[in-house]
Image (cartoon, rainbow, N blue to C red; front, side):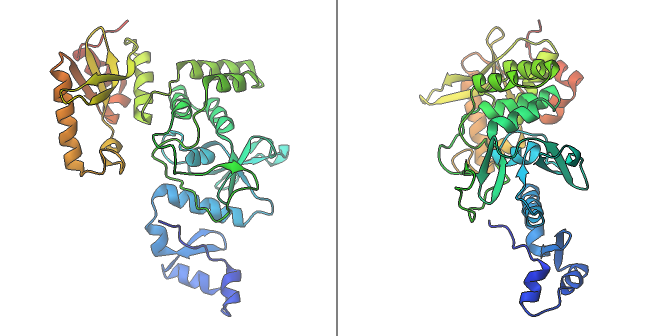
Length: 334
């Protein structure tokens, strides 16, 4: 689905009409004001998901700047498909001006270099995957930083497709990137790359924090919820699980579980809604059929003398509840 067209006063004037018509249409509910002086059709705006609305806001902001902005932090993370909690409210951009680093309105400015570690994605400039990951790792809470790092290390399920990142000035400006990504985009980073970048951080505390996150991170994590779950398990002192453990089913097919506790012969699974609703999960079958297939898969694994414990986002985010759930399932604590 392509984004709705942004409309400026100059567009209306070129059509021989008074630009004040935009304000009138906005008051009538027919147009939506994306940014001061920039509008789009209300019906088109309302049809967009939150991530795509955010992307249209970024495009509108870009039209108001003399120099093309470089998006960074959480804004760049959306284009890279890195796992961040929720959608950012502000647009995050780089600035080289020490006195221009203040956040104003919905724009958060961060000090950085505009000529290093920058790539192009369609009409947008943004910090590269390594720079974006390190920026977030050093500023987010530990569990959120781990999720970002996990996703930066993860190899995309699909080698082709998705967003296209190129050196600045070489991208097709008409390529419309997606701000809503179900999986990380671009080649996976290496831990050695992240460690090298961490060594260049300006303060010891930032370096120590980044190293702790990178050492804990794993490219085998399958989702934001799985990353959070793993941090919660460590905080509660549970045994470190093996990620994406393989089982061979009766029909000869392979099945992987999110977490495997070998000592207890227990498989753990994070049940996020996106697992069942994602369009490319389950080969395009209906949600009902996916759930049935998941039940059959679990039964085949249980037949091998394996116990199962499942949890939801709400259960995992409540530490007391999550600890009780895992202990009752027989997961050993250190």
